[in-house]
Image (cartoon, rainbow, N blue to C red; front, side, top):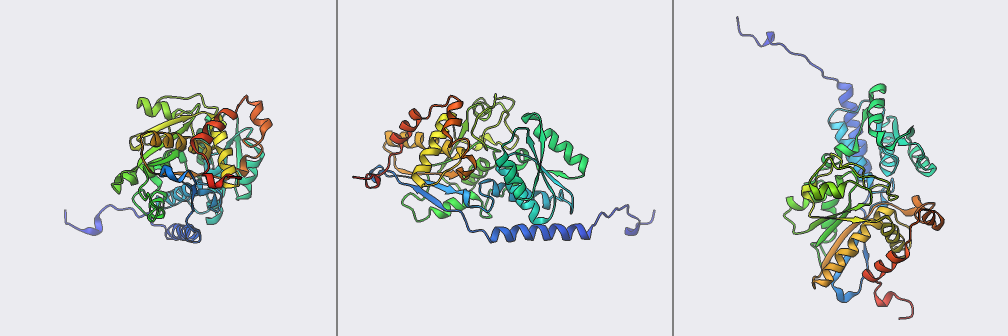
Length: 373
């Protein structure tokens, strides 16, 4: 047989219009990021003589109001460059909270429909926020069926299921590209303890802890990563036992972190320590921080505060000084009718007083901040 390049079997799937739409969508998302300034590091003032500094990276200042803005941006970019999103085709996610709000924002930005698959009984405020950001909600009867229904809906409508609990850990570039870990270390560069002793984050999708843990190793930092988990979540037991099949009962009233199963995006080997935090402690922590910062914060931020308090106690007991960085995940304005409503808290048999006292002792105000001192 005569050799001829023209006789080779080939098939060309080039689509110039699709490539142009992807390029335009990526530019729109990148332009949106460039218009957004980096989020602030807020310092929680403690007694000066302790030599311990605590910082909260305020993710509530993103355009969609939460830490999930970073995740949504990364998920959309990841799906675009993989060729999974198409012009006019809907994007679907299994989420009733902040992730859905942020993803609706980016879907509207690039001009595609967005559907949030939510459990029946989701609060009217969450539905309002998702719809205000340009999305629509699709209710299902069981919370544990969200992902299955989202995948089915994507297949039926010819759309794409973003699947945050699978892709969160791989959608963000942990090496650099102004990820949250790189941002924190740059912002601390001129502080008295520029290399944190601890980073404290919640166990949600696993994306944030994976980004921090990988970045710390990549940059050869001595900082250790502590992940806080809520009651009823499977992450803590799954990590401790190194068993990804462990299931938790669920039922925590702290939204945005904790899952009934260990999700695929949770990378346990990058975590040095985990702490399980009761809901009462998380709510007490959120309310204490709201008093210190003068504005309400979400329950997951309260969970972070409890983990910070435990680490501060341990550092003081061992005579260590240094800094701890955690996240202010979202505003408490979304939870005024729940976590900040005394009647709602009381109706669930939650007693905040003992935890409030414990946290006040662990994280007291500086004396010059106390009226009358």
